[in-house]
Image (cartoon, rainbow, N blue to C red; front, side):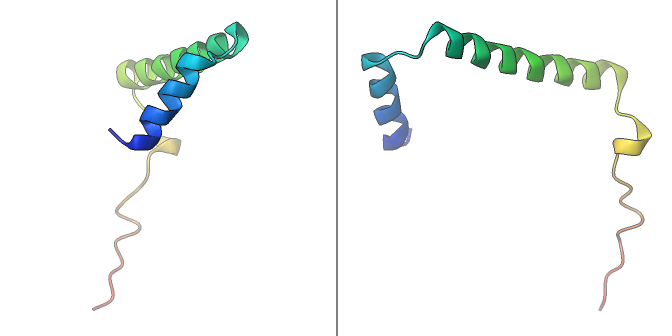
Length: 60
């Protein structure tokens, strides 16, 4: 673990974030999990998937 992480954790222990910030962080995490689950079970649309065959122009 990085020393900066330890310093940030000690700062948060001394001065905890507000309830509003905690709710915001939890909402963002839940949104990310929801998007991951949707992509995992329904798949990714073709328009968002990269077409790697187009970009394989290598110069010798």
